[in-house]
Length: 182
Image (cartoon, rainbow, N blue to C red; front, side, top):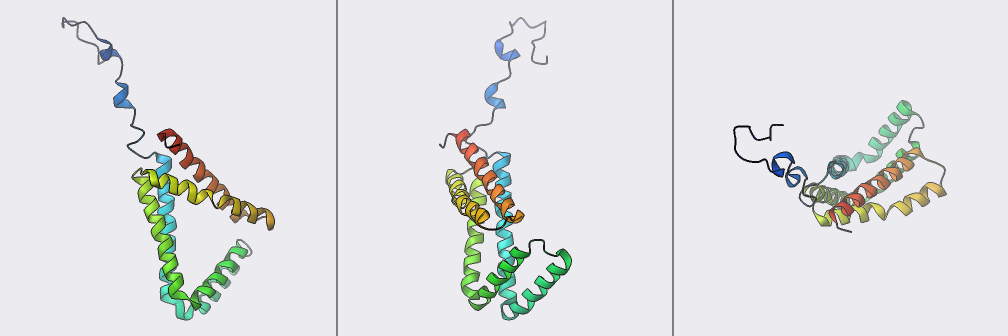
């Protein structure tokens, strides 16, 4: 009731004294990214940082990579047993291939990390191109992940990745609709 005029004022109250200004309360849908989009941007940064950590490990250990991989795989198996064993084995195989052509893999990893950071920046800054990049970039892999999940024995890790990617596509798509981009 703080907006009501005082009784000693000779002014009649106007509707603006009683109704909040809706323009002030509603955020401009084209000006800022939503919290869900910011969460996707943070996820992108985490993936980029993870890729850069992988690149630094490849750079540092490429001469003794087989030794390090064997140690890490043995530690994982002792500590966690068969949990994510197929992913660890797959990562070891990729890393062994990477050690043979480590400069090429290093460039690919840095390029991937750069894409993740660019997308995160675009989403955080509410850029239209970043929404399209995100929905297409995640959406294109969903059929592949679905096929991989159905063609191979069930794997919780791959299922989680599929669900996460579907959720990201839904979040980005909903924000695109809210902004009138589609």
